[in-house]
Structures are given as C-alpha cells and as structure tokens.
Length: 258
Length: 258
DNA sequence: TAGTGGTCTAGACCACTGC
DNA sequence: CAGTGGTCTAGACCACTAA
Image (tube, rainbow over all chains, first blue to last red; front, top):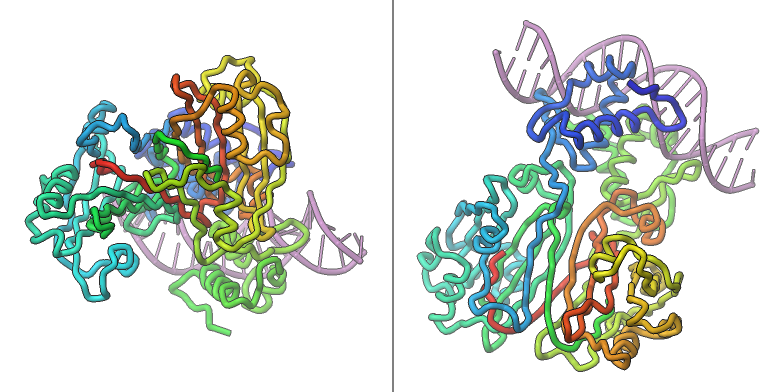
C-alpha cells in the first residue's frame, strides 16, 4: 500500500492504483471492484473520496457502475480494431462485406436482425434521402458481434419505391446482396458518401456496446447514389469511438490539406 | 427559482438550470459563471453539490474551470463544421487546400507555423513512414484558425531524403505547393490513406482548441505514397471531435457494408 | 434483509489567481 | 490580500439489487 500523500489528490491516486490493477489483470473484464466501503477501509479514506475515484475511472471508460451491484470492469481492447474502406483501383469487384472483413481478421462475426419494417425515418435521414415528412422507408436494424462481443449497431434506410417490398431484406440478405437487389430494380449505386460524426453514446448504445455512459461513439452514415445521383440507400453505423480506427484509402491526384 | 425536489439529484437539476442558461445566452462564451459559493447560496445547497454540477457541465464540454479564476463558458458551435474529402472523378485537378475550403465557406482562415525543423519523429510516425529509430524527418507543425478561432493542429512529417532540405517548407508553402515540391524531386504521390482515431484530448490540445479536458478529439493521419508505394509524407490533424463532421465521397463499385 | 452505489451536508483547509 | 475552485471528512439517508 502506498502512502497517498499530497501534492496529488488522493482520489486521483486511488484511481491510479485501481487503473493499474485493472490493466494488470487483477480485475478482469466482467468482474467487479471491491465495494466502496471496503476500498475506503483499505485506503484509509472516506467513501466520498473513493466514489470520486470510481467516477473518474468511469469517465475514462474503464468501468461502469451498476447501482446496487457494484463497479464492473469493462473490456477495453488495448489495440483498436480497424474498419477499412478501400476505394482505389485495387478494390476487388464485389468488395468485402462486414462478415468477410471480420472473418479475414480471424474473428467470428454474427449479425442479429433486431428490426425490419416499413416506417417513417428520423428527420435527418429523410433529408439525406430527399424524402417528404410522411414518406416511409424500409428500416433494417442489425446488431453485430465479433467473437460474441457486441461491436456495432447498423440501421439502413431504403425508400419504399427502391426497396419494392419488405422482403428484399430477409434476415440473411447481406449487404452485397442488398446492393445487388437494388441494382436489379434499376437503382444501381455508383456514388457513395460517408459522414463521420462523434457524439456521446445514447442510452441504447451504452447498453448494447457495453461502454461507460458518456463515452464517445462514431456515427458513420454511408449513403449510396444511383446514376441519376438520387440517394437510394443510407446506413447508419454506431461504433465505440475509442475502440476503432477508421481507415480510408484511395488513389489519384489530390491535394486536400485539411 | 425552482424547487429542486427529488427524485432527480439536486446537482443534476442545478446542471440543467445552468446548461439552459448557457444555451439561452445568459452566459456568453468567454464569460464566467457565478462563483460556487454564490451559486450555493442561490440554490440553497452546499458548495459540494454545486461543484458536482459544475464538474458535470465540464464533462459535457460546455465549460472549463480555471483554478482561482472561475468557470468559463466555452464556445460550442451548435452546427458542426464539415471537413470534406472528395476522391471521385469530380475532384478538381489541384484539389482544394484547407485555406480554399474555408474561404469558400465564408470564414477567414489563418495558419501559424509553430514548428519547422528536422528531428526524429514519434515512433508511430516512424513506423508509418517505414523509417528506422534514428532517422530524422522534416517536421512542420501548424496551428490553424477560422475567423480567429482555433480549429486544428496539423503536423506533417517528411523523410529527409524526400524533403531534400528544410527550406522546402517555408512558412508560406501551402499543401499543394508541398506536394508539387515533392513531385519535382521525383516522389509524386499517387495513393493516399487516412486513418481516423478518437481519443481524449492531450494537455496541449485542450489549451489550443479551447475545449474542456477529457473531450474527444479526432486524430486524422493522412499518408501519401509514391508510385513505388513508398510513404513520402504523413500529416496528423487534430480537431475537436464534437465540433466536426468528416465526410468522404467516392465513386466506383463498392459493396462494403461495415 | 444485507450489501451495494448515489446523494447530500456542514465544515474545514488548501492552491491558485489577480489585485 | 480576498476570492476562486479543489479536496477531504464524518456522518447520514436513500435507492437499488440479489439472496
């Protein structure tokens, strides 16, 4: 046990000790830390100070407190996963789907279709798709896992006249299949955009992704346009921002400096 | 004044009140909130509770506390800025630089060269550039502003044999100019990658970008490769993650689903 | 019911800023 | 120096979870 002397705030020192212990593996992911009263005894401090140290670790995303249960250690990968988008001439025809990408990386992918219906999309989605307020889209929401761990929430929106019917999107229809189906109906995508935003995780995202409240998430919105430059599909992906690296790759002349 | 009754935690109610007041413009960016003892009197609460409310707002990025001075309101744009990368056939030859991009958006850009020297780069940069531990690069760090507000820290790294000499990078050499100079020396870039990461802001970034400690930042690393696929330049851009939207656009067949 | 985290108080002292 | 935010205590009560 260390001395816990000033000048550094004691609750910060407690946080340091606990952080090191977690990183060392003393408290593996899923386990709980000792209770706050117990830690208070160990460190010879008041529970308030301990509580503050715990709050600090939670803000850092290392743990999540559950009222009445304890402080559970979260699984924070030391190495970020990579989500790669290659758009140069090397891109294989057909490209790679989420499932293929992960398989190559040696992890087992799994996708659960949690919602699939025709409904009015959120306003910002309707705007992207250039739809009116009351226009419906086919909405497909999937929960995606890698080796059983939740990694992504994906929600795609397709205007009903593009989708044709809801059964375009049976649970097992993959993305490549999705674009193929759209192409068959004469809306073959030729241009894509991706908008990347970062914001604090919403309630649902905290729960599914098993991250600490307030942690940042990526909101990646990919939109596909057909030959007439009409948006035919858009898909919103939510990922834990601190656990992923997004990489884009392209050829050609370019001198963007930003 | 409201009642501040349970069930909601009082410090959260205080945070709500202050947050609304800030959004309403009662405390404009740059001003300070009333002192904690004063707020404690106003709300009829203990200073500890007020302190907690303040900490909450700081975690949200709305204010930054300065020891001995007060809690200063930060300037958090309601609309995110856009950093656009077009890499399809529409891209104009020559592309658009940071300065042009901002000028078009109607804001006045400014760039300060804060560092320009030959030195050994950080390990992760050396790895990207495929350099040895003791190989030096030309390092150019710029602070960029829009309408006088700090928006970005950009640091570029160029292997010395590519740069030739330090004077390739005089303060007024723009990015297009930079690639032109590199091309003249026979290292014309033909392929690019961008890696996007999010992490908590470092000390220096908090200070320059004027954001709250712990707020997430984008770390965008763009690397240029020549015809032999050798990395000839890499540039790290740091931006306040909650204030920007990154958008990528491209054509061609692609069916990535991730 | 026992144990957990969450909140709050009254009061104290410290460290830093700016006059 | 006075005023600010930062830390800490001792003790209390509440809300939630699980046995």
